[in-house]
Image (cartoon, rainbow, N blue to C red):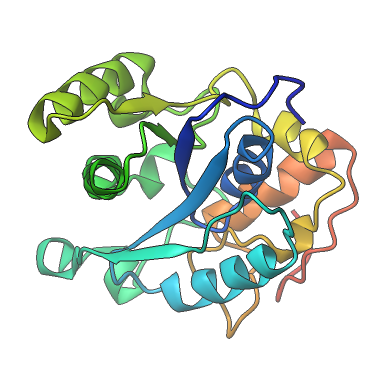
Length: 227
């Protein structure tokens, strides 16, 4: 975890999905800010019920006095995505798919805009997002986050700083960083089977490989094991 001293009189909003990186980021942020609010945006995609189930379970075990209650915001993407795999479940990116195949257009724009409104209304100046090294998307770059900070601050007439502290880390690094947390209660799958990881989608494959690469035993329950 971060060795940085807690920021003085600064609160943060951490964008959470329930995945490894956002949960480790949330835990890390609790050591750096006075108060931290986990912020989830529900886009009404097919895995979100399961994602929220695991997210709430993880938060119940994260007993920190400066952790604020989970805020769940709503902003549907069903009206735009329509026949996209994230809605229909058809042709979900699998084991051999590229990272580019899981791109969800505009999602970071929506997350940050919604979170920034919440921050502005609650006197919070920092938004943290768990983007990792090697992320190929244009809405996950340092340049994008700098410009979004400026635009959000201008549009809301409030100081808003978008930060991505894990941008220099790979998923394996984050798993090592959070190895003392209950990582088996994080959730990464885009094709859940009940409340379990499917074990064969793009995100499950990425997760398995990262645990193996980190040398950390993966306690996650997958419907289909192996890499």
